[in-house]
Amino acid sequence: METCASRRLSHLLLSLRTKYIILKKIISIMDEEKIISEGKCLYCSKTISQQGFTRHIATHFKLMQAQMPSSQTALHIVVSAGSYFLHLLAPATTSLKTIDSFLRKIWLECCGHMSAFSNGRWGDDIGITRKLGDAFNMKNKIVYRYDFGSTTELQVEVKGAYKIATAGILLISRNEPLAIMCNSCQQEPATTICAVHVYDEGEGWYCNNCAAGHEKVCEDFADYAKMPVVNSPRTGECAYDGGSVDIERDGVYKNKQN
Ligand SMILES: [Zn+2]
Ligand SMILES: [Zn+2]
Ligand SMILES: [Zn+2]
Ligand SMILES: [Zn+2]
Image (cartoon, rainbow, N blue to C red; front, top):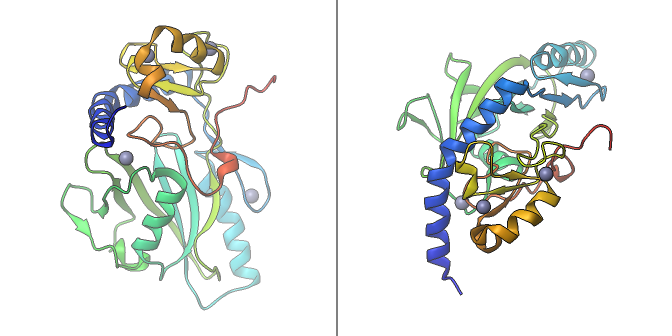
């Protein structure tokens, strides 16, 4: 029976070692196979590409503002890490603390790590009690980091300000699960990561069938190194196994023909 501390330590060591490789793998998958990232629009249910989403949603916001102008200001915020993205609408008076808590729930929380918003460089932090409306301070982009060991870094951008009434943070869209396929059979979507074998080029991401096979040849996988693929830039990091809100879109990619 492993102790909690040694388990955490092995997780930490593993995640430090795997972090770069997982990132490299995701980037190389995206480069080679041009992973398409797209999200459904909350207002019209259309599926829109990551590149086109800001322009698309702006037309909804402008119409809402014209039809029912509010005295309140709401900001259109895009949070992203590569092909992973969230489009949010939030009152300008929302504190960074509230945004932090939302990001933890949807994308990040594994074991209560520290986090910070910053102007970009490490240490150049923006106070967590600041309101969204003044946190950007003439810039339109800030950085958010969760976990200062095995860090997940997100870009937080303001794309527009509208006179629209909204209570709390509204999730306008997020990327649908990305088409990351099994390294072994190349046919089925990857559902599981082996945190040990992910170091080897073209290994470590498995579908359900191939994961069962890998379990027979990899003791570490059977023991502790099995991690779920989830729809988050924290996939494969630390002990992260998925969000606690919007769970239906937190799964893995589904083959279109299935
Ligand atoms: Zn729409
Ligand atoms: Zn953790
Ligand atoms: Zn497979
Ligand atoms: Zn393995």
